[in-house]
Image 1 (cartoon, rainbow, N blue to C red):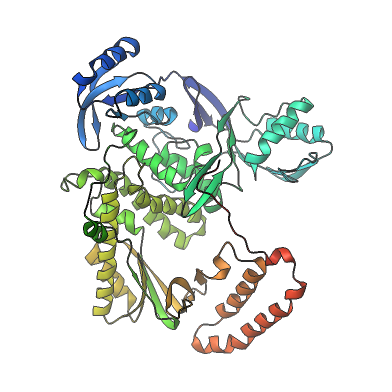
Image 2: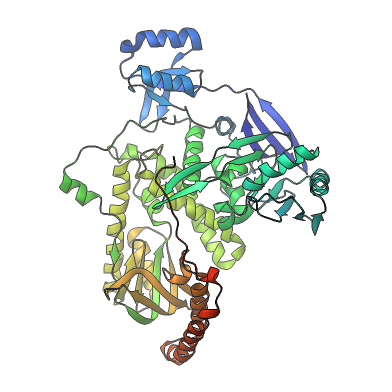
Length: 580
């Protein structure tokens, strides 16, 4: 049996799948949390009440810092927060906000979408689930009547007619095909409307296998300088519903990535399809801690220590970059460290509890090591087989965010000093890589945090020497030519370049064609120009392309008066730190 979905309603609900059939099991599982008081006699009356009314018991438990004496309290979050307030926030609480279904599965050593006895850390896993794609015609914000729905199962068909007919046909298809996974563009917006229309028409729409839905509230959050918005969701029981438009992980990783996310984190694939990469890596760390019987802190009590300004300035310097000289370069190699920051965490044993005791095995290195090994394997396989691209993408994003979470104030297992040590090690590694390249006679053209562009050869010797001295895995890309672009002041831009790889592919970063706010008219022009340049294998052939590229530009300028205004629109995201 394979777990396809989990939830919690007065007990852990587990939906298991086998040979096309599903079974629901509800397991009684009451919430509880752990409590540590620095001075228990000071809170004697509180402890007496907790023992008398809630059955609190003395116990010992383990945190990443070591053994801790305290109490196990069979109660929920409301009681935990009341204890915080009553103790003036002196109480240290654990396991308060852990999802109960995840906690239950961790106790059993099970995860969704993974057969018993099967390794979670495998790239080769089956996806045997029946899939149905649902595409509703129209605007989910509009008020027009429902007229047509396209569905794809073993064939593509269109359901049309009156609103009642369309809904009845969809209900019949859900009953007969009984999909395990529904891929539904903009489902988070469409589903409430479809369910409302079905109720009015007297049609039972069995999208949920129990008829019930779990609600996920809408949310605004700050990410990479922007306020992002996640619409509220209705999540069906026993069936995986993926909003293929809104789900970042579906767009980047496909269904395979969502399934792998569930296997790694112990969360339902309904959640891994909706959560951010940061939430997934945090959930993965929580699952691993639960599996090792390590308590999960509710609110961390290890604030950043007070430091002199010069100490802070020396420690918190971010990543290292070498500024390029703008221009065209031929026969260039890019040496790139695979998942550099997570690799540093593992190689240097960096974790909050190892800062004072570097000799002890760290929690973060221990849980990230298998994830890092899996990423190295997926990246190697992707180079040979593009079908692994989705799996590689979700691993990449989880590992990218694990570094950021070491410095995030609310991260369960983060601490800003760990964050600073990681970037400090990364700076030293890039500088040493530059020195090695120059010792071997390479010309260093550019460097950004975890990669270096060089001219010279043989590049395999550089790769071997760098890996030998740093102990870190690298990949090597060869360019026939690459162009580093200037900033307005004429100096080289750090993150704007394009070039042709030795495979014939074109790689571009930071230019208009790669920006989300570029008008479609401009993007398409630049893509045509780049396609022309891509055919050139060297400087001589690039020179021969110059007239054609200029002609493409002149044709585009001449076509401006007749262009669709929508294709000339510049997109700007209007955001606020807080929504009232």
